Length: 408
Ligand SMILES: O=C(O)C1=C[C@@H](OP(=O)(O)O)[C@@H](O)[C@H](O)C1
Ligand SMILES: C=C(OP(=O)(O)O)C(=O)O
Image (cartoon, rainbow, N blue to C red; front, side):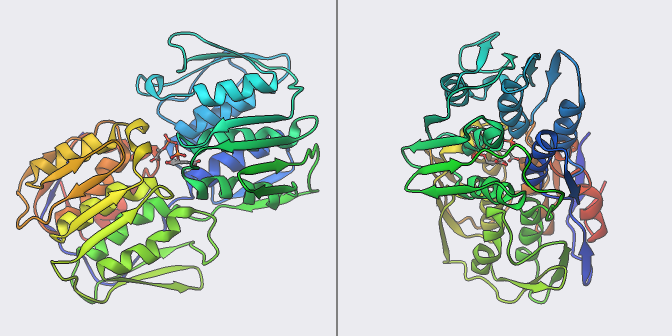
């Protein structure tokens, strides 16, 4: 299915309820499976969270988590500690290209029994659950923080807890801190000092805890882009956001000031307001190693506003749902942009115009579809395979339509 969007205009002051954070939801589900005394509120309705929930409830020998990276990594650790259970964990063809060796090596060092069924270092995996007897391990921290979060999530049920020594530059740090914060919420003792993370064992943490999932900040980025690409005075309310977020992508509130968008925290959310026009000679210079998921949104916003952008810290983008650096270069190129990419950076030159009536390919990547859609405020555009959005945000197109986007 493709979505064709005629050049659109934002309707007056509106409100949207975005689904719960998929990162928080998938952590909360895993913790709930380990410690049954956990309630979850505002769980994400994303495919990745449904897949995680289904996998945790299943007794099957073969579990397929499709494109869900967090589910693949977190469940590898989870099944490694499920004694007397043997599972084959697999995913989509893209998942079979997303590396998992660093996590598997660390789990093996702790005592896990995991074998590769196709290519060394990649899913599918055969996991024979057992008690893990070691309690300290080191791992490379510059490839994906999901390996680290996976280990931290199972750490409280290890006999002696876990001491994790992180090597090299640590990437996507806020996601590690999110995991630690959720562990602390359920009463687990944690510390993170000088690249060493310590988790104390806790067989039965607190009597009863409710984890209230905040709405998804990465999904909010598309509406930041909508407001940035609108005229001064444009406003939008996003519900269920808080000032003390545990999601790193809450950095959007600060980042989008550069695009003339102001964020006001209200009682139950955020009010976005376009307050200033951005001068075309503005350069957007950002290191996104702590917020990789909003890179696509930011580049497209900058392009829509005819700005130059220099983004660094993008080394993880090549191993996500698609090679996001290549996908951005190709699709922005169709719209007339001049984009240079390296292994870890992207440079967008300021462009004078936006080519109309272009069909944007999405490469099985939800964020390609959602990042490009706001450009319909500037020109007519088609988004191919638009149902990819369900990976994180199934209601995206309905919500966009409710704002006045002219979807066909
Ligand atoms: O732990 C998480 O919930 C996530 C961590 C990040 O991955 P990396 O650490 O691989 O960059 C992020 O891109 C992903 O969408 C979600
Ligand atoms: C990278 C992402 O997800 P995952 O790694 O969990 O597949 C994402 O949602 O942008």
